Length: 515
View 1 (tube, rainbow, N blue to C red):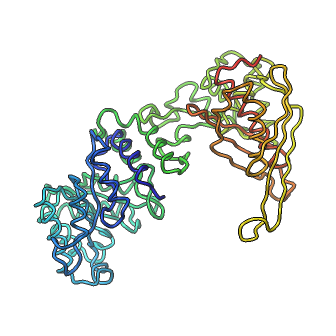
View 2: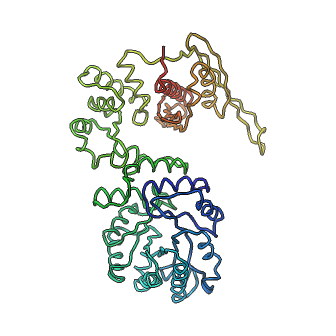
View 3: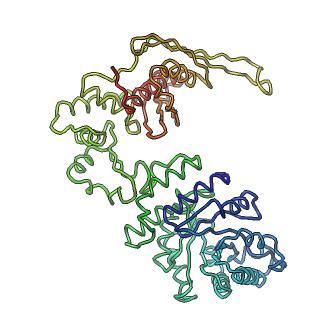
């Protein structure tokens, strides 16, 4: 992940809206764009819940703190809080920093004292603390105590390698809490290399930590950091702690997805609490119980975190699943046993040949509407379509081959015949362009449609190039997003079916009369 200054300026207000207390904005002095972020943040950000923190390191070994350019850059960032990273594992002190135990402690004390004297609140991140504590608990603890004695507001114990388990964290944090007393504020910084970052954060809080560092959606190096939303949701919902101001937790799903969009990383569907599948139910047995009482199969009301319950329609679906999914889409199917039986049978038959409606709600709604009304919404009638891919060897940069795709679509819409040709980056893109060219004059709403995701799955892969192909397409009009599915003997035919569904559903949602 490589965020621009504009990205950071867009994400910071979302974090503030969530209700976090601190937003660490980067390393001024070491990274030019982070220096620029803090300069612009002073005039472009107005935060109501959070304060900005600049991140940096303690002074260099053998350098006076007031002469250290990197420490000066932390002051120049003009943030009320400074987060300092310091070594707390003696092995890192001697092998990585190549200095003495005593000098490392002096580096901590000098830098914290200097910044506090300049009016900054200091959070010290004790890097590699847990590994260091298990190797030499006395030295690791002395690094923490040194920071507190110099005026640090918080000392964060970091599982930098991410190798700890909750029981280890409980023991270590408890021992440090006993050593430094009940007054100083301890924090936890967990990486997810064992899959326990959230659990380790909760264990630290239970053992006496009152400050947790993490990232929205768990972004971070290697396997990531603790997912801050999951940590906060567990503490608020399961432990009754009041952490976020102004009902921030109810905005968690929206904010998590907004941050994902800015980072250009697709939201993780199975992310706890805020993922699209967090409250999704598929099995017919589940659906029967949920029809009686949703709480029977949900650990919390999804509204609490701004999410919603979803019914997935699949070959496992029974009538209850179809009825609940219909209700979710705005159709009351109560008492329509024959209809439910037809839809259930049709879904199972479709999935037997490769379709899936788990992630293609729009295609399922079109199927449901067809069974309800006896006809599918018809905005246009396809007469024919074709694609041509031409490869010109040696014409590209470095004598690489150049491939050009062209598609022609012939159709009728509103009583008129249209022939449209489109060019694109591959045959599917060319088909999309040709279809748009044929329809936009009649249905200007299509100009707003944008394909945002395209997934191809080869079914029955043992048949090689003769395998059936399934395509999932995600489309948006800037306000709504919908997913459609297509299945065919090749990727082009499957894509064409998914594209047609996407356009029909988009026009239906826009309120366009198909007649």
